[in-house]
Length: 122
Length: 107
Image 1 (cartoon, chains in turn cyan, orange):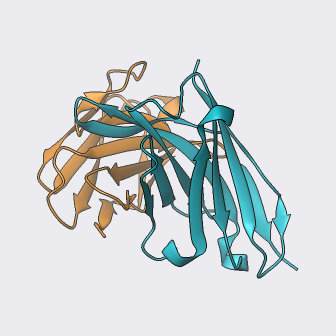
Image 2 (cartoon, rainbow over the protein chains, first blue to last red):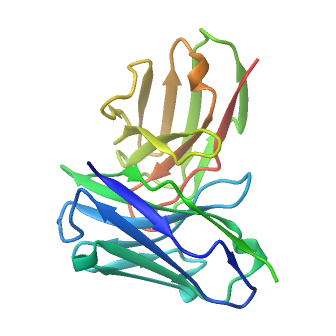
């Protein structure tokens, strides 16, 4: 079955770089009908889409966070990695990875990881 | 970026009620509108995609409609497990933006 699992540090200091890994199973990152996004949710707030990587390695980023984000994938390891530089306490959130499926022209997030909490504090 | 605006932000209803949540995009996005349900401490769960297609395994009391820039999620005969937060999300183009959420509470 399809699963996604996020991993990374629970606590980072301000100005540090955050690196999160999404390990997927049940599908291949080279499959042309899927891609993977990172989405975050600050405590008590709404979902915020961060970045996406397509099967052909094309990438897309949040307009407001573009300068701080890098997304990449290692198909052989079934992993998608997100780095976010210059972390700030406002970046405290639960970070999710989610699979975006392409289905006859429709695009939707059909599977999500459980989320990984990240706190930014000195 | 496409802005997604949901209304209401919060809603109180009783078991058995019918409720409607609306979502408006800042431009036409039809039919690339998806709806998610999220319960506390859990990841979002896909309910509806392409504005009106029910995701496999989702109860038929959930339905979606709309076109252009205006969409609705309707829940018929609310069940106790339906009290949660609901988000709309556009997949017309990146960045894939979400609405601010609608918190559905028990009256």
